Length: 362
Ligand code: ADP
Ligand code: MG
Figure 1: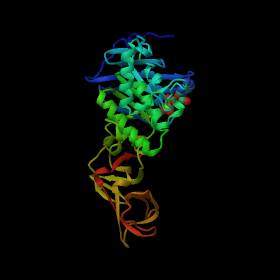
Figure 2: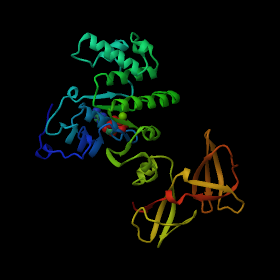
Figure 3: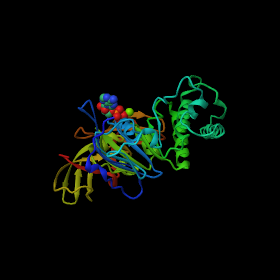
Figure 4: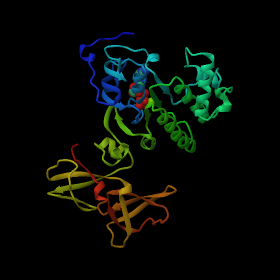
């Protein structure tokens, strides 16, 4: 394996508490596809961290770089106190990193027991037996040790993959969209269970997913990725309610943008005039208001400023499409306990605390 040593990479400064850190990491494929672009990120010890982004934005490549399955073109990666890529190279098997892939990647010719035992090198036969049984208990598959992967459901295979990755007691667990092949009920159940197991063991975890609900429900912090770059890192609530830019605003949840104008301390728009307390520094001028459907409420009112033009029943909620007098549309999500009919005129109410303003040219 070729390694270019660079003087600059020798020293890596870490923030207190950072356990996995990437500094200015870049990875190109075939010298032209930039999969990871000058990426700097830190994950704390014991943290459940998610990388959220669309398909092709570099999620899998980042995990493979941390695991040592890819060599970065530049930058430094450290795990614990050790630099593992940069001016040195630590082999994947020495990094104490566990990885679970989307397709589970179990060995088809091995039983569940043998799959889990695979990574347990250098321990006595009795210790190995105990460890595999402990793992089987942990993931709730005690009576399936002798089955082969094809004799298991998708959910059970995923549990085996998790048990196999956990058996050698990794310091860091990398999860590459491990729940995406499961149906909704099982997905929910396994998410919760996986998080419980990893938190119980204090394992630092990095999950990558394109599913915002998954990232939000599991993570202490989320990093939003776009074209191999981090757009924003923060707790789920912050990412959702205070997106740092248009990409995050649109990728994370449903969003409407409306025209507005700042005049002194006021934000003037078709849905009302609000006091502008400034999430960005803007001179007087044209802006876009970002509003999420859960911050939009309405009452049926014959003198209202909008009309319901569509209503989609989602089960617990209904999402309404409201058309303002100038033709702009905005969405509102409301509990389905009380359904309003398409064609009704309505008066819109907005939660002003959640309005985010972007300058037109941002
Ligand atoms: P994600 O997991 O977010 O879908 P990937 O990390 O798999 O994204 O891919 C990021 C980019 O790198 C994509 O454009 C992909 O086509 C490209 N890529 C990934 N692996 C390879 C490879 N081995 N050879 C060439 N291009 C690759
Ligand atoms: Mg991927």
